[in-house]
Length: 209
Image 1 (cartoon, rainbow, N blue to C red):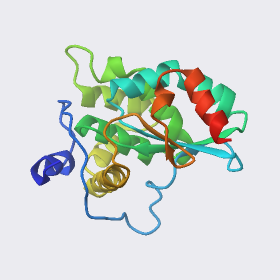
Image 2 (cartoon, rainbow, N blue to C red; image 1 turned 135 degrees about the vertical axis):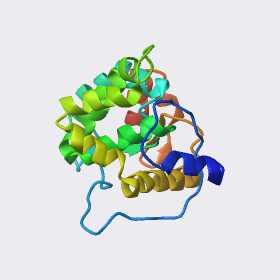
Image 3 (cartoon, helix red, strand yellow; image 1 turned 30 degrees about the vertical axis):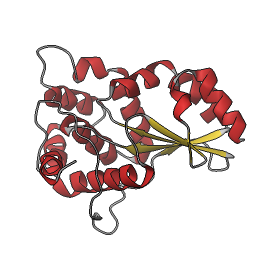
Image 4 (cartoon, rainbow, N blue to C red; image 1 turned 60 degrees about the vertical axis):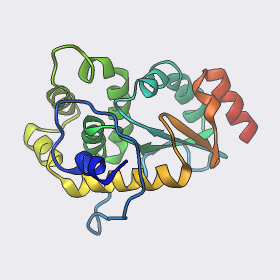
C-alpha cells in the first residue's frame, strides 16, 4: 500500500464504495490508556491446547464463505467442546470493512463475535446487493446490535480507532506476510489448507494437538 492509498483508508468516515486495498507496514499508534477496544477478541476455553488465529475482512467473499459453510462446525465441534481457542484479527481490505471492524470493536467484547458472524453471514445483503449504500446498511445492522444512530456516527468519525486498526493490520501483514484473507495460523504456524473444508480444518487441529 502506498502512503497515499493508506491515507485514503484511514482519512475519515467511510464512503459508500468498496475499494480493495493491500496491506503495508505502519507506525504504531495506541488508543488512550484504559481503552479496551483493541483488546483480544476470542472464543473458547483459555485452557485449550490449540489456538487458532484468523485474519479476516468483513467485505471478503472468501471470509464470508468460510463463515457460512465451515465455521458453524468449527464452533460446535471444536470451540464449544474446549478443543480450540479461536482468536479474531481484523484485516479490513477497504473502507467499509474498516468501518464494520470499528463497529464490532466498539461493542462489548462478548458481542464482538456474534456481530462479526452476522455481518459475514449476511454480507451479500449489506455489502454487495444492488442499489444499496453499504454504510447505511451497516447502520441498520449496527442498530440491531444495539448501536444507536448517534453512536454509529461517533464511531465512524473516530479516527484514533480507525488508525489503530489499520496500524495493527499493517504490522501483522508485514510481519506475517499476509497475502490475502482469510489467513489462518494454528499454534502460531501458517495453516493455509483449513479453508477448503471442515475435515481439513479438523485434521489440522488434530495434528497440532
